[in-house]
Image 1 (tube, rainbow, N blue to C red):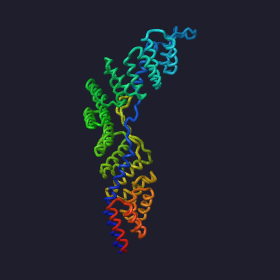
Image 2: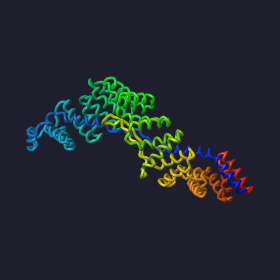
Image 3: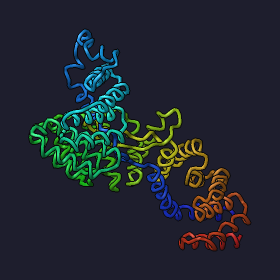
Image 4: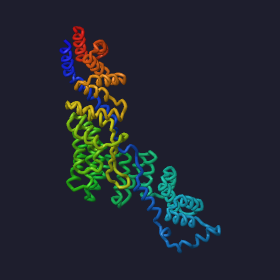
Length: 470
């Protein structure tokens, strides 16, 4: 009878395997939630606009004058106490040329205090003061002085710079109004159109950014902008258009195609299209993406969720073998660099615990229980009590007859609240195989009284009946 019970226990385990593995898929959902993909979470400072402000500050002959020329009347007047607004303005210009922006702000402020003259000239001083605060990243004061200048005399360039200032202050609509004005009132706006598009992107107006990129592509003939437009399409959720731009960029011999593939892969993940996302990550590997190990992690994640367990095992084993230390998780980000206008992708550091969990679960799905146990051992070593890790390892150990070790895993899983119904049933099987009839009956009764899975409840009833006949 004992041999019959033992064989029957194993048969029951086989019949329950489908139910157990169905539960395993929940681990994928938990793991995916741990991988947060952020896309430009906050508007970034437009460094190109900041540099433009610096160039505008330097647009004067005096700042570039020789050292001898600088020792002119304004210097003597400073020492004699008979200085004028123009003297302080020139001194501020020289301070800018020397990179002394705080000193330039003080000198320009004094020039404004002493100034008496036409509004157009006063506006120039206000703009200068605004630009100085932009360079110093003091956007509140930059806005104050740019507002004052624009009240006296209009300037498309000042409006463009104020747009970035407003964006950094969270005033998106006002920023876009300034950009629109700039485009409408600047004859050669095409020359700085890429900088303008950066502002639209940072403001989240991707539809307008797409239109402007299309205009820029048509006017310049440069296919590199198709990659930027592809980024905007991903933000709009129009992945098919993003892929079309990616393909056009690749056909033109673009050098950053791997970054494009990663960007599209991340977008497909967000759209729940994991199988396609995994293909693009593998394409990026083939294009020699500079951080292949991070791609392995995302390939494992996509493969596991899309149930391509063999591929998940392949890349999971590769990555686990290469990692010598645990690394904290992070956010995957992608966007357009505000200074260069080029696509920038940064992936999360590998979350080794969730990697081992997915790899172990994938090995379990393919019936490779020993390999699954190895991966789950690593998971539990890195994360003392990872979701489902004890439950999954216990299931693997039960499958290969390691009943005492499996029992310990199910004890831990039950204590942690991991799959209580499946854990109680599986612990009952372990206790039965180890001769603990009372303990086994207790577990099977628990499932019948507390479980919601009808099939598992029926199997528990069958096990109880068998034990009662012993």
